[in-house]
Length: 155
Image (cartoon, rainbow, N blue to C red):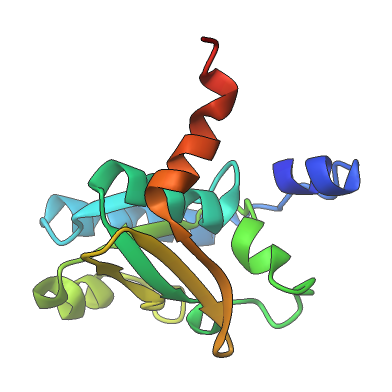
């Protein structure tokens, strides 16, 4: 909603919540976290996937390589290019970092069809996002963080 408000000057339609589906996701994710399978986790609230990935990269000091083609999408949802994939603020969505050795167990913990491995953490400092083999974003995480913090720089 925030991205849509800024770009299109409209509030758009708020995401709807499926309480049963959301509860099953929260319970499964809580179980995975309690079992030590999740290294880090970020909700996809304000700013959606794009902002969550950037904030996780800032916090860890590592880059990421993400393929939006692998992102689970409801076929009835219009994609609007990559706007929906990158900036959807739908409820009950998370991006999780999982060690490769924990991946199988993590995936067993979650409801079938509601998750996908969309990328990897990278040792460098670039956030690379692609869709259908086309680069959507390829930026240095420190430059992204500088721009992200700029509104708070009152000096």
